Each structure stands twice: as C-alpha cells, then as structure tokens.
Length: 294
Ligand code: COA
Image 1: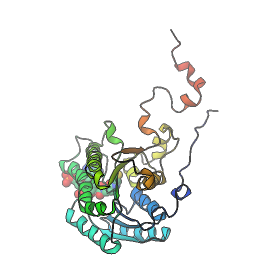
Image 2: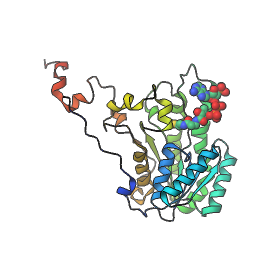
Image 3: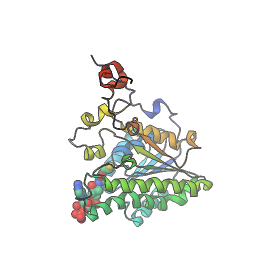
Image 4: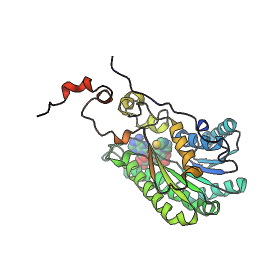
C-alpha cells in the first residue's frame, strides 16, 4: 500500500493567539462580505476588533455583517461601495469613522476573476479586473491613509501566486495582482516612517471559496489540486485568517513590504518529473524510474 502524506490540520486563530489581541481595534475590509476576506474579518473580530465590511452586494453584505457579529460578539458595520469608484469608498470610510472613530487595520481584498484566454478576453474584461483589483486597492489606500497614519496602523492586501509564472487564462488577474504587490511595497517604504506597515498575503488554492469555484476547471478543486500540494491538502480560509492575525499583531512589527504566500508550498513545487508525493514518501517506489549512476 502506498504511504499517505502527513497532513497538518487548519486551526482556529484563537487556538494560537490571545483572544483579546485586538481589543478596541477597528478593521476596514473591502470584499469582506464573502470568502477569504470574510474569514479574515471574522478572525480579527474574534480577537476583539470591530469591523466595517465593504462590497457591492448589499444583501449579502448585510447578512454577512450579522453573521460576523453573532459569531464574534463584536460590532460589524456593512457599507455598500464599489471599490472602482473613489467617492463611494471615501463615503464608506466616513461612515466607518463616524461609527468607530478610528481605523487601525485595512484589508484591501475586493477582487474579480474568471477564466479567459488573452485571445478571447475583451478589452473591457481585462480593464474591469484591473479596475477592481489594482485601482480598487489604490482607492482604498487613498481613502484610508490619513486614518491609518493617525492610528499607526497596518495594511494587508490580498493578492495571488498566479503571476509568479505565466498562468494561462489569467492574464487580467496576473497583471492586476502584480500591480497590487508593487503598490504595497511602495506603500511600505513611503509610509513606514509614519508608522504604517503594509504587507501582501498571496493565497494559494483555498478550498470552498468563490475564487476557487471560478478557477477550478471541473468544479472539483479537491481532485485537481490536492495531490500536488506539499502540505497534503487544499488551503482553508482559516490558514489565510491566521496569517492575517499574525501580520496585524505586534509580533509582526518588523515585517513590512513583504509578499507572503500562504499556499501549502504549492509555489515551490515546479513540475515534478517523478510522481508526487510518492517519490518523496517512498523513494523505492520510483527507483525503477531513475537512471543508474554512470
Ligand atoms: N469570460 C470572459 N469575459 C468576461 C467574463 C468571463 N467569464 N465575465 C465577464 N467578462 C467580461 C464581460 O464580457 C465584460 O466585457 P465586455 O463589456 O467586453 O463584454 C467585462 O468582463 C465586464 O463584465 P461585467 O459583468 O459587466 O462586469 P461586472 O462589473 O458586473 O463584474 C466581474 C465584474 C466580471 C469581475 C465579475 O466576475 C465579478 O463581479 N466578480 C466578483 C467576484 C469574484 O470574481 N470573486 C472571485 C475573486 S478571486
């Protein structure tokens, strides 16, 4: 019988970090109504922070805010805004300040994606994703910066690992996320002396998310990705949430301008010529495939 890989489970952040870590802190999160960003928001709230979540779909947003409050016992304000429009974001920030008085943490998470080849993607399709991901990130920074300067706070941008290589059908997102990574680096350098940190989380394949659903070729990501991850499983939104809690905490005070892949080692697994993970779990199983020494 072939040996099975060891798999570390995804854990709740409260199992590792202090429950009152973010007591009295305030989060502002774009894209917080669903998926990865909702889980990031929930984790920060579980450690005592209040939050404002921003998105386009007001029904989903309102429901998510209620769920987040119920799950964490903290206040969550839902504000409708499209990150492509600066004025809407500026108004959303004003609502958050009116309610909470400050903003300590910002998650730039709103994103758009679908699979399309360069040849089949319309000019407007490309532009739309650039507008949501890249310009939306800039707009969010611009709308929140004075408050983050005042609180000596911190930014996390949600990016991807797709653009580290030429990922087919992802030209729009690859271009957009490369720009997000660059924007964060400049923010870290320009605003570091004002007490601001800025980092990027680059999620790998995370199960059960809208992004994975949209990008999964057969709608069955577990089948497609699972055997090719060194961590032995798909990512869980909790894995991204835990990195979020760490990066916003004082334990990360010397970490800024970084892009941190939370991907179960996916990025370092370059097209293995031998079956994976069998070849590392049981070298004997692949001995017959390796050329004898000359
Ligand atoms: N394949 C190719 N082109 C597509 C597409 C697809 N699956 N979906 C949308 N487009 C194109 C549209 O055809 C349009 O271009 P056109 O005017 O030349 O026809 C352009 O993209 C804008 O589409 P539209 O539906 O008008 O934009 P929208 O603002 O309503 O939606 C999207 C934005 C397209 C990014 C949409 O997928 C979305 O809202 N996504 C948010 C959620 C999400 O993607 N989450 C996952 C994050 S990883």
